[in-house]
Image (tube, rainbow, N blue to C red; front, side):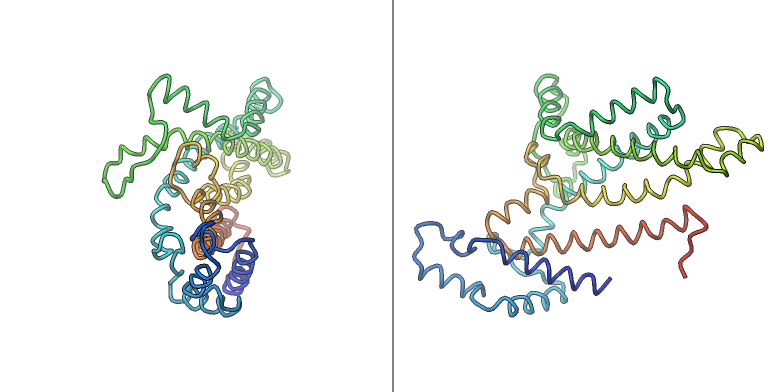
Length: 304
């Protein structure tokens, strides 16, 4: 894991510094003189060689210091933390919806394979998997926020700062927007994984022994199909934390996705590097949890 993190840090740092544009020029605006831009570059340490900047940044990372934001003039950790609440709540609520919708419907579709119900559910899942999130979000906002006035249309007051858990209602529409296409993908994955297992010899043996159908489906089919489903759910969670910029923009949410885009436009290198590094760490941690879950789901898998 450590060599992977080291390699990721080099790639992230190099890629960010190859982005065209000068952070100092962006901060000062078009009216700034070359002398003013150069002074700011020296103050920010951007005039030093790239490898010197990397060693300085890496030494700070090893101490838990991701540097200071060029735009916000605050520690990067504080900037990320201020946006992380929204993204984490969105990811958790969306994952709950995806799991509760996608897996049961996928199992039902596999059990009723090639029936009218299976065809209907497969068609609906294909439709929602193809719908653009911005279109779905705007329509949900128009129906449930503007017409029916059931939910707020935008924004998200902090739950942690206010202590009001009722503020989570601001995330219902964004989470439904994200859950719909991702649930459709989990439905299709669950269905295909179940159908692959149903055709295996041990399932036919279980039926020949006269075991109840529900027991065959849950114990012999579903459990063996869970490995691919858990893998997909793990990476879906990370994607929901880091890659929901369209939904965050539609609903004016202060999340990590919008922060990444804003930081790229501002050439705020420390924030971009910090966010990508945190996302890489999150991917590795989730991947580790998924790998460990394999041994629980399939006793044949053992880690020595």
